[in-house]
Amino acid sequence: MHFSTILALIASIGVVTATPTPNNTTIIAFGGENGEVALSTESGCGSIGPLGPGHYIWWIVVGCTPGAQMTCQATDVTGCLPGQAKHIGSMEVDDPNDTFQVAFKKNTNTLPFVCPSNGQIRCEANFNENSDGPNYSLR
Image 1 (cartoon, rainbow, N blue to C red):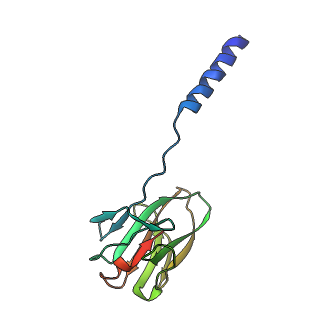
Image 2: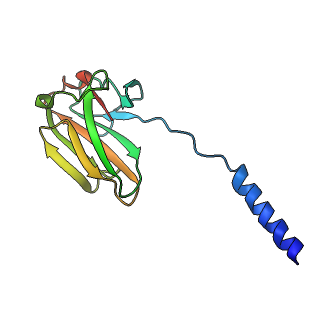
Image 3: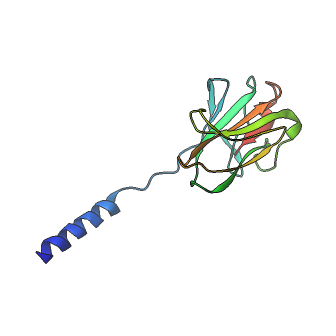
């Protein structure tokens, strides 16, 4: 009886060990009211961009650890420095389906928030003009 218990334990460990860990997924930035444009180029320092022209709304969907203190940031075109807030109407953090708001602030480039229990957020920048996007990246 002990032998079958030990064998079952070893078999279950083998299954867990054989299960591959998830790969880092590519973060994609979406532009437009309904995400008509998508891009996945990295501009630097973990940012996606530069964002394209013709849309004043850009967002990324990323995973996070529930309860963790995080920031959603619109960076400059390099992706490493905070972007100029004067071109940003608002920053907001929502759930990925844009059904509930986690955080919101006008005229800022950085928005602190606490990761919600579902462990995934949508970080969104709402620019003042359609032409402002190419000067920014998101992280």
